[in-house]
Amino acid sequence: SQQGEEDPQALSIQEGENATMNCSYKTSINNLQWYRQNSGRGLVHLILIRSNEREKHSGRLRVTLDTSKKSSSLLITASRAADTASYFCATDARGGGADGLTFGKGTHLIIQP
Amino acid sequence: DTEVTQTPKHLVMGMTNKKSLKCEQHMGHRAMYWYKQKAKKPPELMFVYSYEKLSINESVPSRFSPECPNSSLLNLHLHALQPEDSALYLCASSQILVTYNEQFFGPGTRLTVL
Image 1 (cartoon, rainbow over the protein chains, first blue to last red):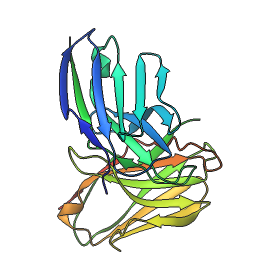
Image 2 (image 1 turned 180 degrees about the vertical axis):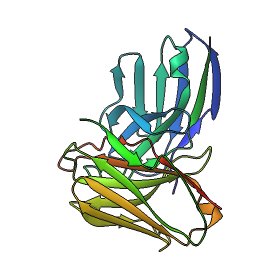
Image 3 (image 1 turned 60 degrees about the vertical axis):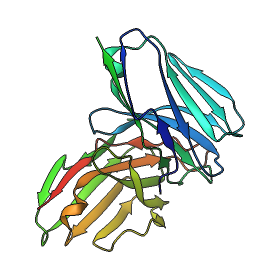
Image 4 (image 1 turned 90 degrees about the vertical axis):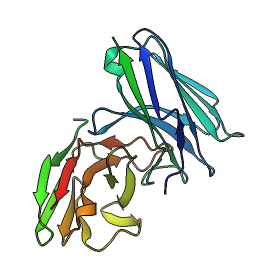
């Protein structure tokens, strides 16, 4: 069953601008991850934030997690055309390996050149 | 090698056909997964294998039959599918003895059932 709800469902911005996507979830989590998917192909892992972390950075990515509100945000700074893709948050409840992920509905990001 | 490969890339089959999807990884991961993704929807978990044993089956119809012959291979056998089973089928793998669960995805098999 789907747990995460992404907001917005679609986002179109100009190249160079920042893009912010939000995700909410319903149950307790161990980790929250963000994945990118290009044109209906495989997903690529972007960043993972543990439930005891509040913020994490990786290159142009910044992720925040608010477990009290059961929400997360992904910020992509200085966007590029190559960032055009769908972005999904994903959670696993039990933690550790061999736990299936529950994905949010996703945000389709379009970067206008 | 940090790649998960899936074959075939595309598959068209009739409702009476039997076909198989294949997935392979050589990262030493002992957890492997099948997800189904309909157009403009997020992936949905179907099966999880842990140490080559089925550990999670998300109430998937029996016309989908998974198999994990060894630690590098994962198959999904298809039989008597319905047109609504048309979707992108994604395979993924991950480590087990860690506190995180980063999954590595293959490019998927796009299945069309006529």
